[in-house]
Amino acid sequence: MSGETELTSAYTSKVAGDLERNVEERERIRGEIDRLTAELEALDHDHAVLLNLQKALQSAVPTPDGEVPRQRSGKDGQSSGTGRPTLVELIRAYLAASGSPCSAREVTTALSAQHSDRHVQTTVVRTSLESLVARGEAQRAKQGSSVFYTSTSPREESER
Image 1 (cartoon, rainbow, N blue to C red):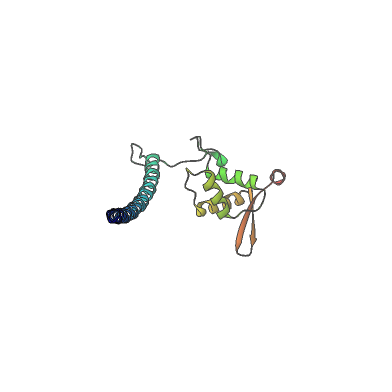
Image 2 (tube, helix red, strand yellow):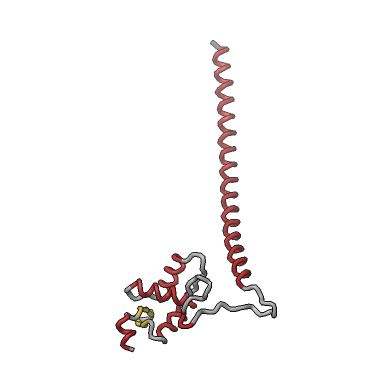
C-alpha cells in the first residue's frame, strides 16, 4: 500500500503543479487579450478618423487654377446638387417633424445620430437655426438662458 500512497502523492503533486501553471498561463493570456483588445480599439478609432480625413480631402480637391471649390447650396436652401440634402434642409425637416421646441444641441444630437456620415457641429446648427429665424422659417423662444427653436407652421408662412 505504501507504493500506492507514493504514487497517489506523486500524481497529486504533479496535478497541483500543472494546475498552478495552467492558472498562470490563463492569466497571462487574459492580459494579452486585454492588451490586444485595447490596441484594436485604438486602431479602429484611428481608421475611422483616417477615413473621415480621406473623405474630406477628396471632397476638397483643388481645381486646375489652384482654388478649392466650395459646396454651394441652391437658391433658398435647396439641395446642393450632390444628391445629399443640405444641413439647412435637414434642420428644417427635423424642426417640422419634431413639433416641439428644440435646442441647437438637441437638433445637433438628433441629426448626428440620423446622419452618422456627416460631421454636424452645434455652432453650425445654431447659426443655421438663426438664419431660418431671420428668414421667418423658424421661431426662437428664450427660456431662462436656453434658446429653443420651432418650425413656423404653413399657416404662419402664408400670412407673411
